[in-house]
Length: 332
Ligand SMILES: [Zn+2]
Image (tube, rainbow, N blue to C red; front, side, top):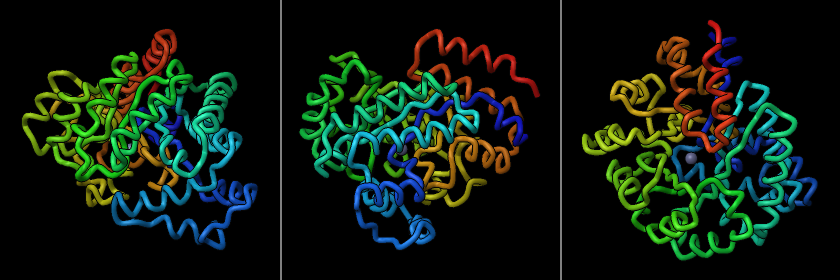
């Protein structure tokens, strides 16, 4: 099964590129940029990668990205993950990135975008990997600031596939961001949003109704509302479920109790992703293996999940058809 999962062409729709920063790279970039970290060694940093909830993780996540200062740092960050993912059989990734987290540290949007876009170009040329770009807004920051950043990103609109909404979900409902999402719609950008991870099922419904999203990131708490499940089922809105992330952040107490099988039983359009792989115990392959072990799924289940993901990926039609065709001939 592990060989099958490694060789399977895999697609992930929910990956925060800043959350792919491994302690080793964090140390290398800190040294290059003359930044002092609060850890004396890679091992000590790894030990600190233990947290109890979303806020605990976010504190660490924002501290880690302080080493990202220059275009080269963003390039190295993204290429490091692209190479690792590609070596594990990942063929497409839609990456989220958080411009506000860098702007507030005095790092310009040009620095962030140039670094990430060169890595995307390099990966698409040299690896068997396509990359989609989701500019995400921090929902615990003011909506006016998000709108400002979206306008500021005008030179890059044509490079973006979508906007997203992430960070601390509680008390920051989708309704707060209606204006920003309307503007993105006017610009012809797709919209996705985290909802129903820590927040209630009503946030899933709000994201569908008020933000007109084509994708719900996480969404697992939809199961607490028949209406939310029905709405997701009717529209077949894709859910980007991140099993190891949910366990790391104690959204569920163990993988064996994870609602993934229940979501599939309801006929929902489910995919799996790694969210923040450096912090949550591994990338997309690790998530696949963990699901195989916990749920006893057969090969067909993983073909379905990746077919769902390919159909919704932010990529060109030829690439989509190519990836679907490759899944059709996977042998097991
Ligand atoms: Zn996420």
